[in-house]
Amino acid sequence: MNLNEKTKFNLIKISWALVLFGVICDFTLFTDIPFFAFKLNLQLSSVGVIIYLITFLFTCDLNKAKNIIIDKKDRTVVIFGTLMLLIALVSSAFSEERIYALNITLFRLLLYYFCFFATVILIRLYPQLINYLIYSVITASFLNSVAIIIDFFFQDFTLMLIKYFQHMNLELQRHYINKVPYTRPSGFVTDPNLAALFTGIGSILFLLNHNRNKIIYYIYLLITGFAFTLISSKSAYIVLFLCVLVFLFIKIISLKKFSFYIVIFYLIPLLPSYNILTFESLTRLDYYKDEMNFGRAAIWEASFRSFKTSPVIGIGSGVFFKISYDVMIDILKEKEPQHTSEQIYKSFIGTGNTSHSLILAVMVEYGIIGLIILFWFIIKFSGYLYKNKLLISLIVFLGLFVISTMSSYAPYYKLYYIICIFLYSASLQDMKILKQSVDTKG
Image 1 (cartoon, one colour):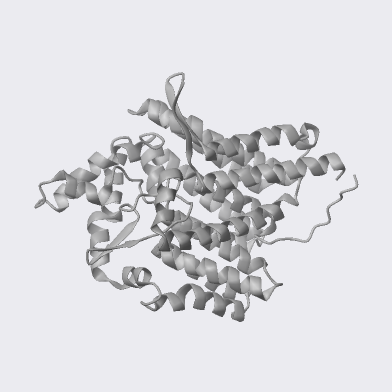
Image 2 (cartoon, helix red, strand yellow):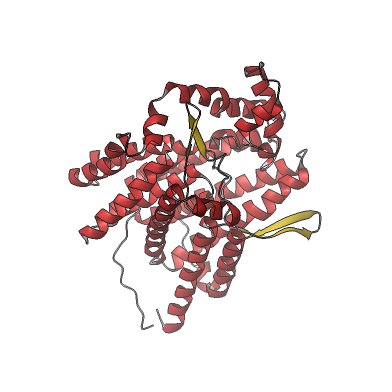
């Protein structure tokens, strides 16, 4: 790598850092910018991705890019992304909320599709970039874990996050147990469950790759484990435990590492004095009763009702969030007819909801066609990872899919897109940081 190539590589690293910073610390710079028939919001996340794409165009050697060997895994993901983008365009074009849906498709989905495509080429041109991507996620996850802890204990910090960084307001991020509110922190990340996913991924990558300084090892896991517990994401708890257990079973990590991880992330949090939110939300029956009446069960029912209105191609990108309020109100009135004030129902659902499931989100917004494309990709990509013995990547990928079927953030949040792009990139090295010799002399 000559000096010029080294400079290009450093620019790529800086632009990726801006992408990561943008999707984590997302805030709106300008709103309602007129653009033909659309009104756009300019957000820090979009600015980061645009800078990344410009850097890609500036640094990419087209002659070398033409000679890149695209393997079956690359082709599978590119075909999947292209097909999903096409069905999103068709679904949005025929949607009853056409302008809104096309806005989401053209100015969000298309942007991150280009981001993925650029990353695929860059990691082939600069294989050492994968190591940097892994380091960046480990570091960013740790820093946000610190922010999560501050978010939990200092309300002034939380109010600052709400005002500037699209942090959920206090009502929407609370669990109510016996009518007592408990705040769920998320740091700079918008959604607590997405923050739990990001924290869990960072901890797994660190567990797999750190074998040197014991002080750093203990500090990292103690802080991320404490932050993970404060969020109290049940689906993340279950999936993360299963992933680490499988790592132990197939001898990817030692019993000592497994034991320390489980103590920090699972055993200590069971002490009520340590974190009443996690303990109560996992054990109280009244919490699950509210969840079934006003939580995911009602949201999933609303998703099925919306799906029936356009089962083949779906209702369009992001449209369920826009219409979910009215659908949810009808469902909650059926479940709790004794309430007469719509304000009571609104207190349960806010202003709108996602489908709280990747499968349902795809089914509702892109119909049966989108669902077929999704399951084709899951089977095809899992088969590739298994055949090529990329077992860590296979476990992480299946874990991501399982948690996404129960989450509120997939496939809507921008950090979720970047996590998917990152995990695909890291799968080339099976989530491991490899020692690579880098030619800096040209």
